Length: 294
Image 1 (cartoon, helix red, strand yellow):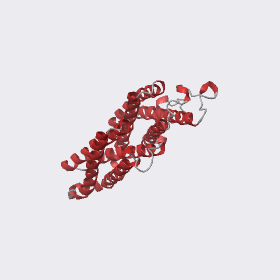
Image 2 (spheres, rainbow, N blue to C red):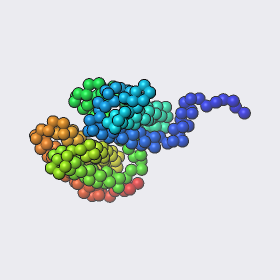
Image 3 (tube, rainbow, N blue to C red):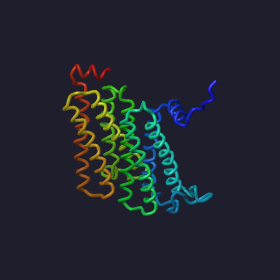
Image 4 (spheres, helix red, strand yellow):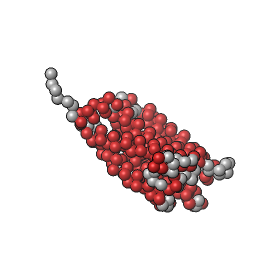
């Protein structure tokens, strides 16, 4: 009977095998999205400078580790979830790096996400200590980049089971999310009610859905379609989505009528692109349809 004990590396691989790397990656993606939305909530409620501008401590309890009031709780809870998101990012990266069965593209994406994580932590610290708009923007866009990296990695892991139906579903999600994004923007919603913290969280939730839909659509299309024009359309959807998200955020921050108009124009173009994609995907050739159905 062998007395050899499994090495640390083999134990780690056994743990990942039990959990399932695709599920670990999906869980990490959810935690990253939750961290972004909680950060939006903290900013929207004016809680970014709660915790008496302490970091990483807060303003109550032993060593000032816990929140003293509701605004402090928003900021504290954002940091609390971000901590678990960070651990999940590191765990995903280590699992991808140490497992020979993981696609090297997936490993590269999640490792890049891990490299960006300490940068994001430093930016989060600076939002508390300085709270400047430039730092807030960098903090937000770094989080969005990490989110996008994990969306791409998750799709790569699951892509063998994704078909034309999922492609159309992603385009349909984008087509539904886009008008909601516009309706929840200050350009429209302030004619009905105020741009409250709950409205802001809803709009940014739709933002993440919109980004994910565009990325998923182009990635499935790249694998399942050979029609170059349709692939070009899907690539245009991704670029337009990032433009719309960027202009929508800038319009909120600057209240510039020109940016408002540009946001609405590009949103309209993107809507046409989503609908055209939904219409054109089923009209692929029979060879493409057979490939999609496999």
